[in-house]
Length: 420
Ligand code: GDP
Ligand code: IMO
Ligand code: MG
Image (cartoon, rainbow, N blue to C red; front, side, top):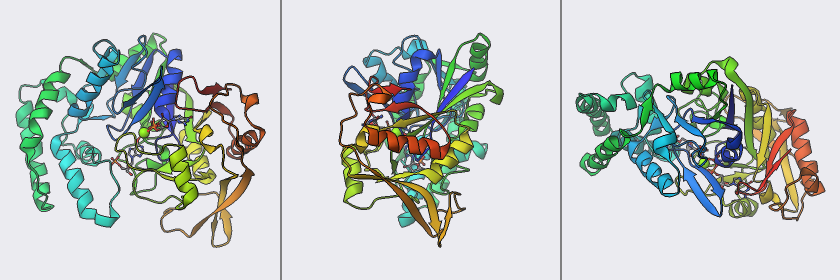
């Protein structure tokens, strides 16, 4: 049996925190796509931890953590991450497993990412510059290197072949670089990773499922950044939706039971691309300050706006969400009014359907406005103790998207969670 946790917006919905909260009910947590473009934060005992590649179940001793084949791995980042979590008391040598089929991010993938973004100028995607797109391009182009290659005796010659292709690309971009600045750390990290459990995670995970173990698949990014259904081309390079869990772990669709879909009580986005309910004003700035909306990976300020129901309905449909989770509810306290976008007004016609290109469509968000509330939500642990105006807001959202709320998060800490 496998349940899935994923984001329903443009990432940073609080997946790390929710996975950490749910982990006691599971034996295994597995990441199925993305790479170190992700930054998943979790907090307990007054300490905050940010994970990029490692699953968010790593701080629970009983839990097996798997980095699946669908993930792209930067050895240098992963080494740093492993060292950090080990220092914080986790035991990655014992409970971290890495797929031999996960693709490797090479130093030149990062350089090509930087060169490609620089070339795009004002049309840039706003990539995290972690080499994600070039690595997935090589995977799909059937020329990538995988974790399993690092133990092969001719790894260096395979590496050189891929790098010579990247050098040609970089020359075409006229991009200045010095690979010698990056290679020592890369090869050092490759050696370091050899001491961890590198396995056929598809066999491993299916064996565990066969023994009745419970698996939680952890998505990265969010549905609106999905390569197929997101706001293309302003997306990431993997399938972030439920289907990605099957291909990114090697599990059959009928194994999937619950799908936990997470959304923030408002919206944020980092990087470029359309954002219909964006607030380019003082209210947006206030949301950013109150929600501390700065990227967990890059530190970039996140763009902010009101909750958008057309995209939320779309995400719920694509993922087959069974359990809805609302995070950052506490951030909305203190606003006089809380608008929510019901539908899009396209030249006078109201629609809830996402157009082919949000960017080019004449979208005007059609808002329904709720009265605000001033109570601090962070100490509340029961749904019935939530302020009435907040309940009116969240019940409306629930009714509009046709799904009950399972969890309401009222702060970054594990404990600041209302289970319904
Ligand atoms: P992820 O990428 O989906 O795991 O989310 P991030 O960790 O990038 O961003 C979410 C941020 O919000 C982190 O700083 C979390 O600690 C924080 N957070 C998560 N849930 C809540 C919540 O309910 N309230 C508040 N105030 N912060 C939260
Ligand atoms: P988590 O898992 C928010 C965004 C980038 C950029 C676009 C493409 O923490 O929610 P990429 O580096 O993948 O080529 O960038 O996607 N992006 C994210 N935004 N949260 C993330 O991950 C993201 N990962 C990528 O900002 O707009
Ligand atoms: Mg994040």
